Image 1 (cartoon, one colour):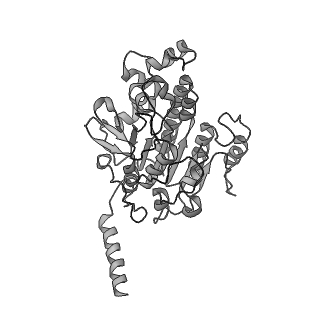
Image 2: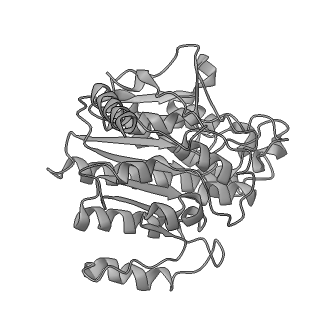
Length: 363
């Protein structure tokens, strides 16, 4: 008994010693499924525009083409390049020698999201099937911390997140695919979205809903319930790439950048979130590059699909813009980075060390 008491006291002292004073009190995480680093940092690709994968090529050039990469990327991601590049940080610009990569060897969605939220690659997470993830994730860890209980929520277009985030164990509210929000006190707008999502054309299939519905749910939920942590997962960039439609891939990327801008503007106008919220944006995997047909694909055999990126803005993040140091960050580091931004030390399953937090993200 004495040994147990001593161990408990040591654990408490260790936690107290770790506790950080951060200005970040709330966290918003957004993922753009399968969004390549090439378009994020270079803008629209001239070879892709001129290829069989682009319909209405003249229209696409008019909307997204400019002589320099700096101009092109600003056309495609105006919020990312007008706000985050000036007030936050961007990682993974391989043209400047900075790399952001996956640690898992599979380079597709479920393994990628597992790595982001559990802090390590798991060889068992090698499928997109509806298997239940045995690994503790950082969102459920935060949800169990004082002041965050019941204040963490996820909305996703892809239907797989209840398994990825293991809602049966974690207890997290995860509204994925066409899942309705069933809160009895939900606002009329949220109740209307429950109805609307079942009536819009199912362009992405019977299980994956449109990104604008996921965005609207997230926005209205923030307005009413003021979550401390919100995760919003978009899907259409990956869908359009797999379909081989480069025009729609670009259109969806710009649309999602606009959704993020609107959400950030709303947050910054809300006294509950203003100047105390960090926003982190990333992707679950990259895509191929050469030969050109590999743009549609990703996976173990597709070279370059391990190459990713992320962006962050918030009160604890120095406004250093594009990181140009010749260093490599890994997606397994993002879970601990999220936790430490909120002043916590995330511990995963026994025997599985979590990737170290990315210290340059924090002052």
